[in-house]
Image 1 (cartoon, rainbow, N blue to C red):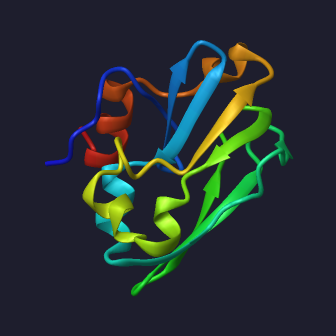
Image 2 (cartoon, rainbow, N blue to C red; image 1 turned 90 degrees about the horizontal axis):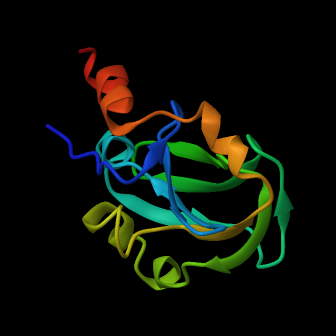
Length: 128
């Protein structure tokens, strides 16, 4: 059984967002990590890149598949996790901590109204 932190919001495409004021930390869920298997490469946007809610912001390559990463929120990228360049496995090892992908300066907090709670996401992926 996977773990879904209660302080996060989730997308049905398996990204999460952690809000700290107007800064959103975005990553992929433990469920997504399990589905992908061993992650070998991650491509993320440049700092200062601007995205609208739902835009593709990168890709994650594993030994099994390539998955797109989407942003749950509109805003400007203020930081990318550079650790993943040399150690993409950090995403698998700690998806909700050191394995985050990007941090975004949020344009509109109401973008999160369409996201799922931990319970809703768990029900979605585990068929509860």
